[in-house]
Length: 363
Image (cartoon, rainbow, N blue to C red; front, side, top):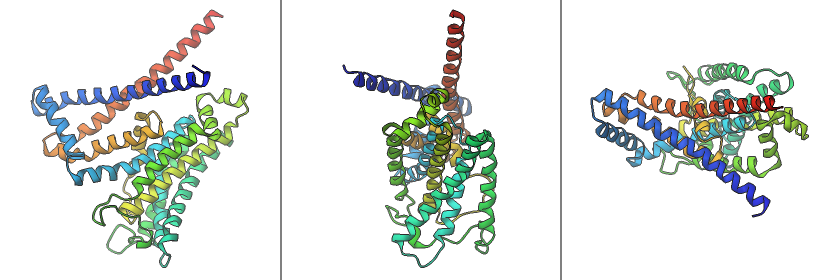
């Protein structure tokens, strides 16, 4: 076996081990949640597990309408999961994906409202506007992190609230539709094609999300830029010693993350909502994207399946309630999954520190 083949084989083993942890976490989370159903319904284990799994399946994939809406819900999660995955690979925690998604939504709405533009120009122009908005919103904390050394977590959290205020200003101000807490619908020329007619929300943004997942995979693992981004995430000191610019790659990773988040917001408006609405709170796609990326181990292809999982859990909450199961069981399952995966990261960190101490003691 050649050296290249040996490296590829080791990488494949690492990927399989990584995903097996996520799979085990999901199985354990579902197993533990059964006991809460037993307690809530006073059922035995077999009956409780059957009710829980049947309700989740029925609520997410059990009918054509539910299947469609599960994929509709999964689409923005693919975008936000990818945005977080890129940041994680660089050792960054981009909490601002939520705000970048919001900026993509509102700026795409404003451009989408412009009348008299043919669809062949209007659609790419609206998408471009949303992606640029997301990129700029992520570039600010990225630049501050690289040049000044400020914490990206604090900056991105603050910008989330600024983004929500900006969105509400336009939604309830200059572009407010009378008697409604929304903007008017965007022009037909800026709407994305819906596969099953106007009354089914599944649209071409799902294809765009899947294509971007593969593009991000190619970027991270098949290009020099991706290698530098991953190198900075694995060991900034070693990367800098090897001639890789840490500052450049921090800014670049944040901008790429913002582009993906902004694109997700733009396509969500263009394909699903067709307008911007007043935000009493955050949409939540950016925050859920953190869990999506963690379960996928920041693997772009894994993000697709992780997003579908979380979409299925969230969309099945209504069916769970009809079955007499509190919808909070969904958050319980998600929380347990994240807890197990976070435990793996903590275990790795502790083991690395112990190895360092042993190495220093042996010197």
